[in-house]
Image: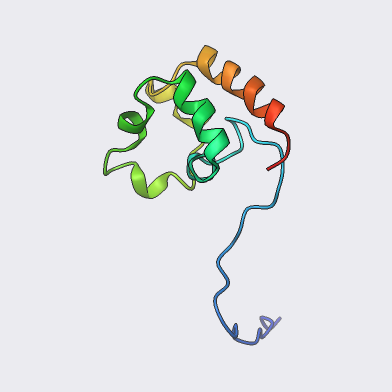
Length: 94
């Protein structure tokens, strides 16, 4: 069986996040940072969050990591994430 032939892309289109409910499990940290109201909630619940996710090794991956994915590394605590989820839910779809 031959592989299908696909025409080349005309231009690269940067992926964009579709509106939806925000949370700490499925929403990337970079997406939360890009929404001022959501980032204000995160900063209120996680002291010194910029230092926790701002080191040079993790910065390139903020578009792939959620806060829940960092639980195993001790970067954040689950009770803070539960409070953040409640407040993000109140913001509605973004």
